[in-house]
Structure formats: C-alpha cells, structure tokens
Image (cartoon, rainbow, N blue to C red; front, side, top):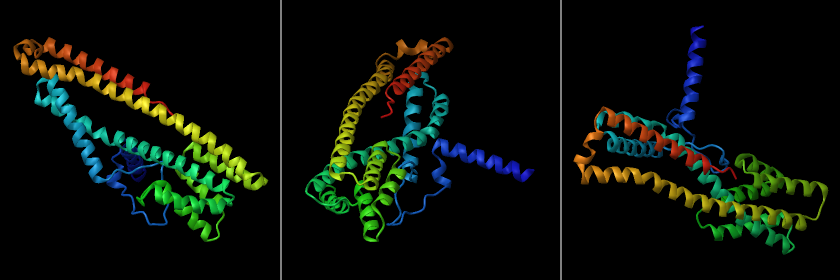
Length: 282
C-alpha cells in the first residue's frame, strides 16, 4: 500500500512538472541522432531557456508589484509567479517551431509542383526539391530541409515515399501536411493524374497557408498594441512615484492597498481577456 501511494504521488508530481514546464530538469531529452526524426508536437526547454524564462518573469512581476505596493516582501512573493514561466515559454517555442515548419513546407510545395510540371516522377521531384531547398535554406538545421533529406534517404534505401510522408504528418501534427500526405497516398493507390492532383492540392494548401500568415501578422500587431496598453498603467505609476511621491503617499496605507489590489486584479483580468481573444487556432 505504501509503495502504491508513493507511485501515485510520483505520477501526480510528474503531471505537475509536465504541466508547469519543469519536467525538462528531471526528464532529460536524449541527444538526437542524425537519423532520428524531430518531434513537432512536444518541446523540452534547455537549462538556459528555463532559467532565463524564470528570472525574467520573476523580475517583471517583482517590478510590477513594487510599483503598486512599494513593499519588498510583497514583491518577492509576487515574483514567485515566475515559476510558471517555463510553461508559457515552452508553448511559445513549440508554436514558433510549428509555424516555421508550415512556412517552409509552403515553399517546398511550390518547388515540388514545378518539378512535377517539368515531367519528373514524384520520387525524382522530391529529390529535385531537396536541391532547391538547400539553395533556399543554407542552414542545414532548417526543419523542412531535414525532413526532405530523411524522405530522400528512405527512397534511396528502397522504402516507399508514403512511409516518409506519413511519418512527417504524424510527427508534425499539422493539418496541411496531413492533407498533402493523404492526397499523395490516395493518388498513388488509385492511379490518378498526379500532376493535376498535386497542382490542385498545392494551390489549396498554399492559399490556406497564405491566409494564415496574413491573419498571424494582424494578430501580432494587435498583440503588440495590447502589450503597450498593459504597460501604460505601470509607466504611469512609475512616473507618479518619481515625479510626485507626496501625491502617491496616501495610496500606501490600508485603504490604498485595497484600492491598488482591486486595480491590479482588473488589469490582470483585462490582460487575460485580451490574451484569450487573440488565441485563434488556425
């Protein structure tokens, strides 16, 4: 019974660590071999990323709390919220990785369609696209370059093209790549006109990714405006504290602390509302 209770506590602790983003300290990610595919649905923070996210978030919370309360004890307590920073840092890095793969996949589709239009077979078109991607992305760590190298390596070893595409679609978890893979597999099985299907599929996916890119640019602009709006009250508090400390002195009493706490809660609610409004799943 004691062993079972310890296991339950351990599992519960592991879930908490995974939720908060601190699991990378205990569950160290093994170094990835050259032939080992990259996972796009999970991300492990490095020690540097984890430490920087905690320190920066803790410092920001300390500064914000000190502006409102002018109390080191309260500010230190508020800075403890920085322990949740790895969770959001991990989500941001994961979204960045997936967005980069989407954009790079869009460029690969254009090159692949051009190769097919030149009369090449699908397998040869993938090899030609790999050469184009090497010119487009000199950095060998580009995600799409690694994926096409893996697919071409499987082709060289006699593996079917469908295996490499299915592996990429499963690891990426991106709808556009899954749709492309399904179109290729269905066309090869049914013996359809590959060029017509690929042109149509590439056009639809390319237009969709283009619209998503435009939406993301607009969201990024609004998110930047929201951050400025959220920073204005703190800048205003800093200005009053430096320029007119006597004017702010009544706020640092019990009634003032209650009023400041209500104002801080309202600001937090506004920030959470704006964050939720701009979380559009594409």
